[in-house]
Amino acid sequence: MQERLGDLGKQAFYRRREKNTARKVGNLAEFCQRWGANYENMIVLDADSIMAGDCLLKMVRAMQANPRTGLIQTIPIPVRQTTFFGRFVQFAAVLYSPMLATGLAFWQTDAANYWGHNAIIRMRAFIDHCGLPTLPGKAPFGGDILSHDFVEAAMLRRAGWDVFLLPDLEGSYEEVPCNIIDYAKRDRRWVQGNIQHLGIVDTKDLHPINRMHFLLGAIAYITSLIWLLMLVLSTADAVVRAINSNVYFTEVYQLYPNWPIAKTELIVALILLTTTLLMGPKLLGVIVALTHRRKQFGGARAIVKGTVIETIFAVLIAPIMMVYHAYFVISVLLGFKVSWDSQDREGRLLPWGECFARTSKMTTAALIWGVMTYVYAPIFFWWLLPVLTGLVFAAPLVRYSSSLDWGRGTREHKIFISPDETSEDPVLTHLNELLAVEYPALSTPAPIPELPANNWTDMPHREMDDYVLVKR
Image (cartoon, one colour):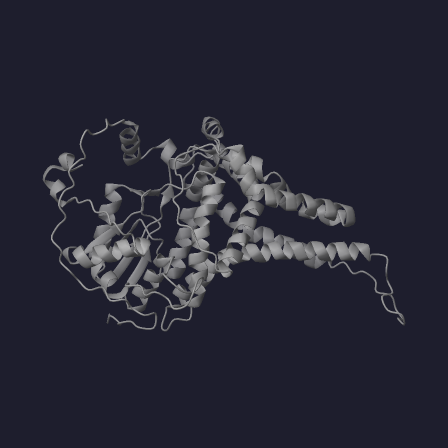
């Protein structure tokens, strides 16, 4: 890379911490302390981040034009997916995210969130206010702050710096886990990090929008446990009612019978409200795509076809993710240690053994659950069938959704077509060309260029109730 860059190569450095204490927070803190004073801004990337040069320049210009801005977040769009599941996630993200992010940007204004990567940050603001403390107590609410990005955005905004989300900035990409198992592993980390935010949501002088970020981030996973409990309790109630359906006198001395009452209007209203909340955003995203981005998705027919299959598959895997998230929430609350293993972004077909090992318990429970419900409350069984179907067929769903052949099939039949496939960004094309090259093994290790001289700057660890207000 240095050879390709010529003179600019002198500004490219390679650094690796031997002791990775505090994980990503420690990486950023060490960089900021040793060399942060040399730079006005930094752009944070993950290992799977991809950003176009034009996007980077627009971010820098936006920071220069807004001296009160501490952070600008882009929308990382998933790309380069080859499995059925990866293309499903990629299609859903590119179809719905721009519209949803535009709404977020409207409501958040200058108190946007930070997602940890594909964002530009002002060095001075970050060094002065984003030194994160170790929280008192034990997990899940104590220890190192895991989902640090939410907290860093909140601390910047609390100190008076603006934090913006630019939903219309193109050229910001990322890769996502290519199968359900790896996707769930990533969520396991986020569950603990987001639940930890409940312990700091009442921190002094936080912006209300940042408090909402903390609260909704935790609720996003806790609701899976609530959903599972509601299904179990509803089943128990239906079975009890079915067993006692012909018992109208429940007490010895009872003058009037207890007639069963069906509140049909409330049931219909609940179904309509739930359907609107779940499907409404999808419908709006499709309308926006059909109106403004039809060619980018391969035409109206491809959009509709992809949306229908995406919705069906989302319904099938929703119970699987519900069980995983409910288990993760319980594990976090019981204090189990979180794993920080990396996930595979390149496509791979999961072996049957791994699929059954990861799903056998939920499948067994679903079979028992379904048989019991069908025997005692057959009417309720049909209401429960969409949930039970995904759980019973969890292993095949996990297996075949990780298939590269199925992924290629969707592309050949114009299913899950995304804009980077109809008019590919030159950056992605160049990346694929570079990854296709097989470089010969080096006979001797490549020399590591010297790091620049340290220009030490203290980065104080701010307690959650300690901050310095920047005057506007």
